[in-house]
Length: 351
Length: 154
Image (cartoon, rainbow over all chains, first blue to last red):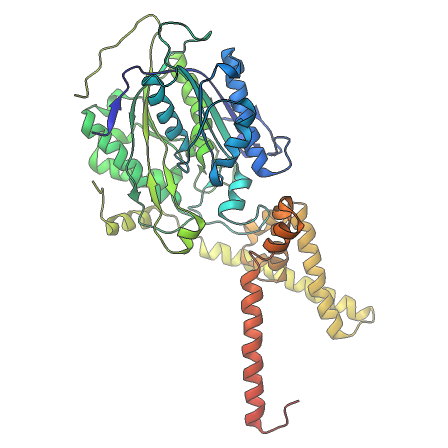
């Protein structure tokens, strides 16, 4: 069994999203909490800019919840840079016990998964998860210099300059903060590493589609849930190519799930007017779309139940040059709207 | 549980991955590359008319393009042009200039010795290495050809 129902499901107390220039031009531009159209976030280097994005997002989430940072007992954060340096640069000033995680583009879900399990198990009662990615920092590290003039493949995706921070609490008895929140993180599933069958670094969506399919199919097989129970099955950043492949697989194996599928990488940008090829990528994609789009809808009750999984392409510039296939992993979380008055809803059991 | 075999996955990826529009990109590369070459010729004629020797004029044309591409890179225009031009801006010396300038800009934050100094030719490295190597091979071929011709090698 890989799907776990949390014994004390934590709730989202608050969240915040940040974005850069391209993100501000996209369909979600208006919904982002903070946008810096220069992409620098007032910093001298792209690496620091990414750190500042995470710090901004966390700060805004804290402000929204009316909390001071010393109330947080745990911060699980990650980004796209080597050794998660952006997260530690950004979050260092807060002095919160810190876990740096790296799951490539799956970092958002991975950090929420780890945090929620720790909260559920009583390791902390109030914690935060934060995820960022910065286009220029990622280009430098994984591809070519920022201003290098190259033509990109049609299947290539645009690493988002975006991020999100989430504050969660499992405190049911004593209200530990002003807001309780009505979005519950109820189930988690850790995905397996699935071979993407391609070594093409400009087709990560295609390589990641199989990991997403594996996690989704395993989830429904194990729980026996009906895809129709969910408003959406959200993937992180498969983009156009990856989404097409995933829908093809779901169409063969689980046709009911096809119409439920939606992808953050296709929501962040308007591919008609923005030159982003196959869509958005980078762990900030799922973090910002979750914080700017899905969580507000869940909080309001417009959405009642979603499965959220982001996919990470596990490769390095060296592994790609050495001709190794890109592997991918897709952790999954289930986000459910709960009315604060009603306590528990009847759900089909996993067991 | 593997959803599909490696072969099946590859087939799916191939099916859904859009191909580069060869015709469109080739035409664009031809137009941009051709324009650059025509500009080069115009510059050469200009330099010759200014009284320079032809050989010096040709060298100056290359230098001019290196300078222009470098400036365009710094002001952030080069990559926007190259997005459409493709090989049209990559193949002429403009591509070399852009690769060096952009890497220098990026690594400047890491210091002038270990940053710029060690990384400036990261992208341009292959051009330097294989350009030099090709020069050596050409020299050897030229030397042997002259020997066979029986003429004195000077």
